[in-house]
Image (cartoon, rainbow, N blue to C red; front, top):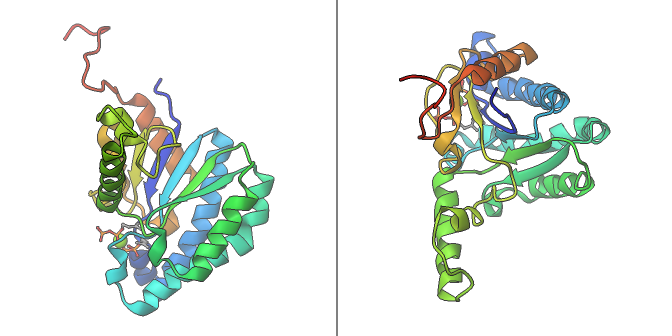
Length: 236
Ligand code: IPE
Ligand code: IPE
Ligand code: MG
């Protein structure tokens, strides 16, 4: 059995789901928000320690302004509807990404939710907002270089570098799931994904069900994680 502490999901396919229902793309995002609630509460019940959700990438600003504005209004919709339930389920909210470009209202809503849930001891529900893996690494490298120059760190290695990433306080990433059948990472958790298991699922995010998470976990549990070593119980 593999241990499973941290799952990340690239929630993709909202637009195509909407299109397949003759709805505007925004309706796909709306439905996607409801799925965030359902899957987060379920993952917490399963005992997952951390769930990181890709909500908005540093590349998503390329979309039409109307869609970007709609996406930036969703944190308010989400926390207004579900913060009570999140509290009742003992879930702790955190956030990773480049905060500076996020509109003030969304930023404040997040800050409130982070503060309100800061003492909760259940699953960490970590939102990646205006997140880009390359930006995270460059940001970390800048701080790392400065701290080295200032004599604050002596040893430059993977372990000390890890402390400069947004995810420094989170468990190691075990499993990354992408919905919508696209098979790419799209700049998500590039450093952290080094030895994660990857599962690509043929389901648009608005159609994603608890059973799909069960299925992904079942597949993950059967994977033989070697981390570059060899499996000494087998003869090959
Ligand atoms: C994922 O769904 C949500 C975000 C990227 C914010 P998409 O909006 O990318 O949906 P598709 O890929 O166009 O179907
Ligand atoms: C990745 O999905 C970003 C999020 C899910 C937030 P995209 O739809 O933006 O990725 P690409 O463009 O298909 O790679
Ligand atoms: Mg997409």
